[in-house]
Image 1: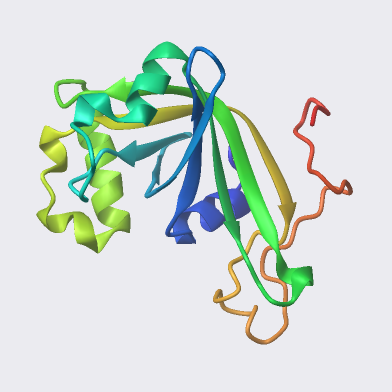
Image 2 (image 1 turned 90 degrees about the vertical axis):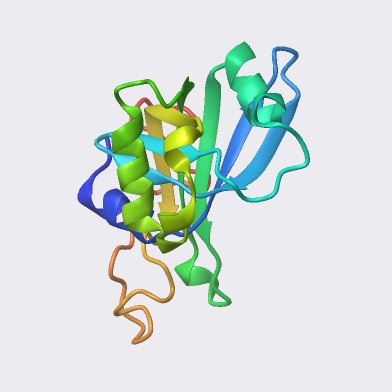
Length: 171
């Protein structure tokens, strides 16, 4: 599902924005940590302070009602010729600690984020995103990537549209 440039971009990105919607289509967007596990993405329900109990979190309730999600990973640069984003549309499922996929998700998250070394991710649910489509626009390299500082493009991609298209030609 992800080509080499997209994988590199996702691996280097510290943050994404997860969009969910409830059964009435009311949207909800939250910043999330995430990691790749094969062709899927995983995001934790970690120990950062939350205003509500885990099972009451809006993103978990939304996914239970409506599994369609989107994850946007982007970066900003003052030089707008260096902007870029990647959008994953797919379905999400809750992965509880007793699921056979859970340890792989925890391992991938800990490999990407040192901060998770002292979080009890083994005891908490994850969300697994199974991509249905991937859209990209602009440069798929973060402004701090090697080469970008020298004005070189290390991963640019322009699909020729101003809004991005997936392989089916839909917007």
